Length: 254
Length: 264
Picture 1 (tube, rainbow over the protein chains, first blue to last red):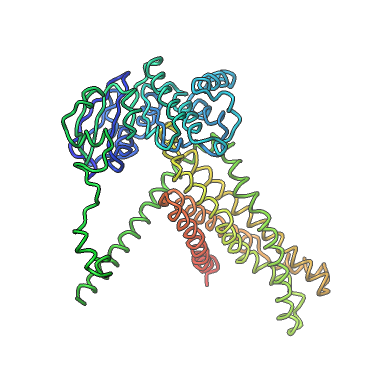
Picture 2: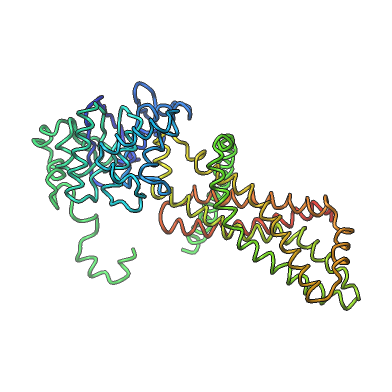
């Protein structure tokens, strides 16, 4: 079981962060919201519709209208240029003339600061640039909500700063709902309106960044401060070291 | 202790059998979804043309070279056997019948599995492991329609075409060896073939075989790519499986089809 009785509200036009240690199922949660995975029980509502009760065409329609998702790797189509990647959802879902699409692409790329990189191929981009292109593509159809899967992981400080600013600006300027899944505490806390901390399939704590900072839970404190030892032990569960050392080579296998 | 091991082994066998059947079921459902997505491809001919280039045109070279040499070797071997009976004038018959009925479709199926099938699996598998397929789903574009169906259709169209090219070039190779090297009279070569090769029994049956082989090989290739574990190890295994299963399927189906078609 990945989640146990989890209950979350994501408010419209707000930035909601979901934080938790690696392997706590944060990405799975986004896939549940997007309808890519089905829960064994429970339901997910997006814009008033129960995601997992929809027919396939209704689900695709819901995704087109309301959701954008930024994958950790960017998930750009490697055989298309930056320009064509951003054009992809527009060409697939609208009947706009190519001239209008051209203008839209330039505006979206301008928003992420990569108008000058439109002729590059995905393989020529740095990780941070690829994520920005993916962001431009995700906002191409002006979705109501964007889900960010680990947007800051593996980024240098500058790219991280750029992404933080972009998420913040898009939320402020366009009123776009943002769901940020991350374990980069400071960056995420700086732009979030509300934070859920999950671990072992449960919501450990939730609240505004201020409230969490003053949390009295030792676990949350360790997570936010990044302490090596605490309620989450440094050692993976094992028998005492002395038994292991005295047990000979066979004990390694058992 | 021993009873435990036996039980473990039995359990493993049961588990493996179940997962095999599970996979067959998934592959069938997958095929059904691909077939449902085919109308989309017809609305987007550009996707199809692009894939026809990748799986068809780019396989042409290996088909041409292999076809030429198979035809040439066949003519030599046929001559060695037939000349003892003074029947070397039937050389074209032996070459054309073995090419049209068996070697053309089978060779093309095997070469296609190795050249294009493995590439299809690797491409789709890599798209899966780099989240391109998930990304497409979240952009509300069904990868089944946009990625899988055009590749499937291109393969099904390409294999019979490649087979007919293989057949033609192999017969030309045989013709070259027979007339230029072995001194068979040109007119005899062609008239023997004309009199004894039946259009329906030999040519059409060969093409039906190639259609079946193409369908199965491409099905295996796109399914393995779509179903692979998204790791470098899983991708390698999936590519290998495409070639091994694809080749075995071609050979096994060839036997069944031959038995059905020629009423032996």
